[in-house]
Length: 224
Image (cartoon, rainbow, N blue to C red; front, side):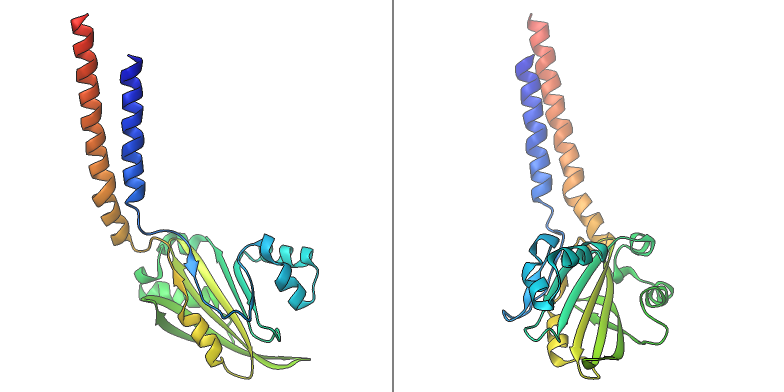
């Protein structure tokens, strides 16, 4: 009896492993900046960024966590910066992926994530829709441009905020943004294909294994 139960548990583990190994959607993102940037992808990595910005480590950690950051990069002169926030909200949970946006939802995304005074464009990159907003600002350091790219992937909102000196987005910022890729499992079609391709066969295999184990157990009981 114990051997049969152990065999059944082992079979469950094997099928689960096969199903998980079949998932190729992954989760996360990638973006490329050159080696001159100080980079942090989690709160525990902010030391170099904090030093470059001239702020306390604790302040940098707090800022990282409060703004749902998953990436921050600061140039040597600190004038060019890239920050990525990722979070789930009602909108992202509802549409799941920017590839699925209707015209109405696209307008909703723009109104949710852009200021009313900003110029807004709907662009595509990496086969994904982004709402792009551009705002020219000025402080004691001079004029600079804040560019935001907003999209939805895997039920989560991504906000890529970029700063550069001058009154328009720099080519460097545009080149960095062009490398951004969201690796979250995306469209509902992909999710269906994943379920159809792995979960359903997995359930069938599991049912066959359970049936074999039950037949073998009944046979042993009958022989006794």
